[in-house]
Image 1 (spheres, one colour):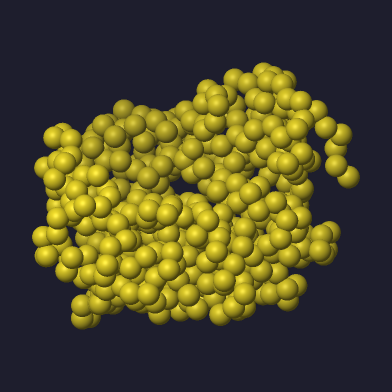
Image 2 (cartoon, helix red, strand yellow):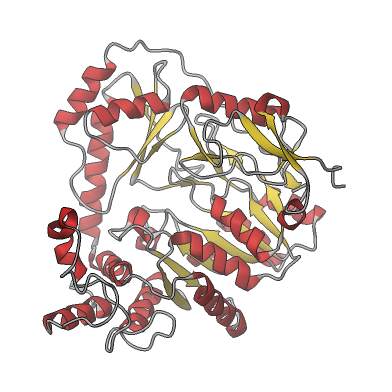
Length: 481
């Protein structure tokens, strides 16, 4: 496949060839001033870290190379419009919910969504109805919504205006999204999809179908997760199903939530990531996936671990994600520590699993490292496999109090073992992956407390005011009918 056009990168390269003298921000002046500890390593990039100069366009009012680059992304993904994001998928979630819904609207949200979705709902002032996902029996992982679950939520809350889905999960796995979107569209719901881990799904099979192609109205993708792009760089795609006014609202929201001084390094990497995808051909993809399969086969020879093979008849799954289960008494967190010892850094771990995220390129794990891993694991005895319990998430629920109400209510901190039956005044988030276990305004159940204790024993960490989570902030409130 031929070389793709890279309009923004070319504009930056043209500017740099002029050897300009900077009398503008940023203060490093094209890299002339920088701390000595980093100057040599960063020197090649600093000349591209510029501002809105003539010929380089303006992210908030693009007319030149940024507009060309965004239009190229829209063509690749089949979007009506695509936008470059410099605040990660988080800023896309904030902007879409703020722009597409009105304060007080009822919006259905997949319960295992990322914390940024719930922050977006709080800022937008919408009233979330939480829909619990289905779980994979073998791993305990949430794998997405069913059409039946959405139908049940609509029957209870017919006033719903929108639906927010997470597709795929952190492990690259999901139930088919098309039946859920069909139900949503029949009900007139606007559908926003957090497709953070699916920026490469536009490549087609053997990757899962993209949410945009399946009919979602707005899709946000973390380009930096699976594409060769810099951290915090993401895409937001709008479908032709949205009106001109709705698209305009999204643009206004992006101007509010995105930095007024966006990084051209991030913008250039988004231009490059799109071009990288365009330049991949079928032989490239086949070669990449063959190498992933070889890695899985080599790892599968270590009897102390198990490679999870997702059934094609049940799930969409990303072949670039490799989920490894411990067959010993080691937790996933402890298994991850062994990977660290041999210089391999997995994406994340949970109670029983380690996740490896491979990229769209060659160069998987060397055999030497696999041999070292086998040596470290060999003293550990095998144990019978047990099914993993999902965390405590009910099927269809509403919060007992919304953020605006909680702000003015008395709060107290209680020991975790005394929190069951109380209303949480803070969100409890195991990290990674950043999916709330208990939401602010939600009743803390005994099973939720057990889930937290189980995660603590396994070695999980939590985000918030108390990472060790020996106590939790609660409030008193009569249960909402």
